[in-house]
Image (cartoon, rainbow, N blue to C red; front, top):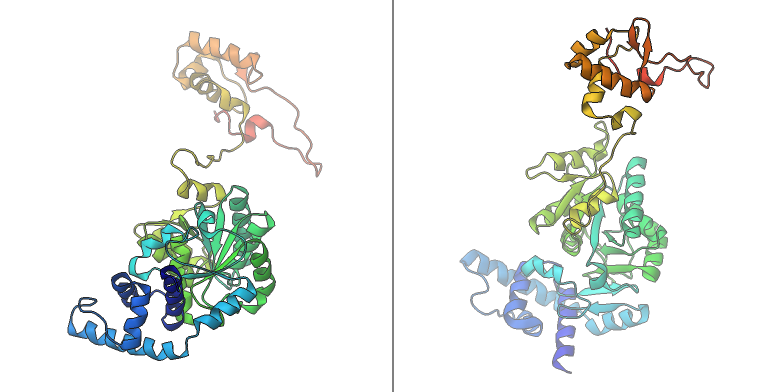
Length: 406
């Protein structure tokens, strides 16, 4: 067996004997290499300096014994046979498909990853956003997640999530509906889809996108592994968007990992009466606060290139008087909404001399904003339009807030 093949075999073994993200094992791998770490587990002897202190030393000894017991039941060859049959592949640190952003996890970096699907993990995660949230999502939350997933995918961004019911599944489906890339990060073997209600979604992702896990084939999920895998979701992405979440939730756990990794943390606001949005609102109040986002464009502004991915600023409808020069609008505001006023009175209200007021009133009259009358100047008098119900609609100059009452 070549050195490269031996290392891959050792990493597959480590996936089978240890819980994901174990920093103690990460230190062993850093010091001894994957094959050396497996030998240390087999013999129960670790080199000095891995940990310091008697208590830490006892903890390492206990962990080594636990790994040694699991080693007896591990069968990397059988895992590889299942992987070959199902079209899975093992990606290790240093491989061309390994995302270097996972190295930010330090000693808690995955030992290796099992992948299923045609998408290239490293390339797909160069521009990626995690969209996460509650399993018991509201219709509001699932709609927002699906729209975010679709709009991000259309803009060329990969949607990363955990494949759970609710927000996660809606984000994945939105990306797939837009024929875009999406990555599902599992807490179990990719041959054991969980939850089973998403079997159809996972089958489609295996055909068109990508399923990722730290667990070898056959492994069932546990609550702890769900929390631990969240660090991978955060590390693969440039930022994490929480769409809906309770105060205590896996989505907020993912946001915590993202913040610790220096990634962007974003939250979608919801109704203040909704329990499902309390976690998002707390994130917006945290220090530092999460960024409030309401669209894919605002998400991309947070995680995209500085100066290149700015979201358009929303504006209300442009009304005719919005285009007037400030001094001209000042004179227009001095014309009463009802009745009329003389030139001198308008000039005083506008704070200009009478010559300026007279000239600008002429400009306004030419534009149809005012008209001359026997008593001076007034708003144009037009008959009220009939509304759809037969009632009179207000004149545009009144409803737009032009003018002041005398």
